[in-house]
Length: 159
Image (tube, rainbow, N blue to C red):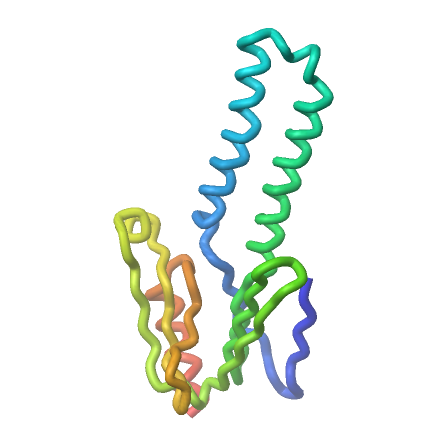
């Protein structure tokens, strides 16, 4: 989905995606959008009259789910031995790439908010960058404490 050009002597350390839990609302939405019309058509015995419409609707809802899954796959954070790269797709044709050299990292922290986030162990990792007012935010990562420690180890090894 994306082309990542590594610099000479740069090694890929890790590719980190958002937790799979971000897909749970989409899966629930897809199931409701397919089940509800099916239930109504079956309940009022209109299924034979609207079977083609239901199939078209189901296909559209399925494609909606696939689209969101592809967006989830495309959004990732790449960690190399020299830099952190955040690739964010808002749509399949609109992306933003943020990059930070490991030497410019000042602070790395993480936060979890909410019961589900605490139970499922996912949260945001914030990277404070020297000379930049806004932190680089790696959102909804699994095991944010481990990701933070990994970044600190890479940062310490590079100095």
